[in-house]
Image (cartoon, rainbow, N blue to C red):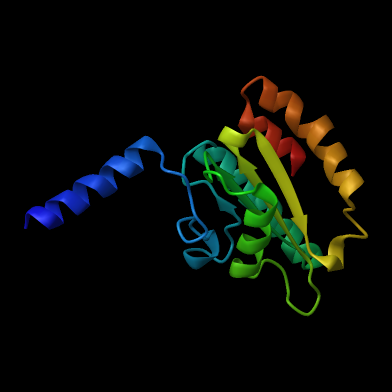
Length: 156
């Protein structure tokens, strides 16, 4: 019984202190709602922002079949954001496999980093140079002011 209590206490403690996420702890929004595209387990974004972005990304998916997943995390520990994004996109199956038309946008707060991981099927539409321009012109100015909600809405 003491062991069970200790395990529960440790789990609650880690959750409250914001333990770094691993690939297996990032919630996939598609598992609870097929029209959800945003994973925001640390509540960095307001729920209204998550809803607005979900509507935008669902509209994109309905229009041209491109699937975008937005993942907003406080920490992934010492993991490399690029590797984490690639593995998460593969694990979740972002985009249609035969078209490789997915985009995963990963934000990691404690690394102060954003990563756009594109499938080969959309690299022609969203090359690295354009992804960087979107981040620098549409997202980072708001992030610097602490307005992550507006930064993500403008970036999407």
